[in-house]
Length: 115
Image (tube, rainbow, N blue to C red; front, side, top):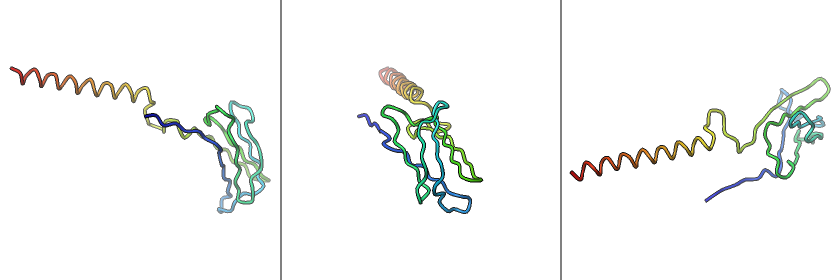
């Protein structure tokens, strides 16, 4: 069984230090050093954009700016490995090694039992 995912839209929320929504703030999303999406936050401080079909939402940087305020955030794809997590190919190799080890132990046990 395989399970896949697709990110339909990304919602970014901007708030001030006191917790109030940052309404009317310019938001710019950069990917590979170029503007990927841009817009203005709504009254709740939210800005939503849709990734282009086939694009992974990773290695993007978001910059928000308002009079006297500026914030920057970099994020990775939700589907990417978490910090400290093994990538998928290493997980597969570890699983195969584990199964081969179990098979070897069972063969040793079977050969000793047959004597």
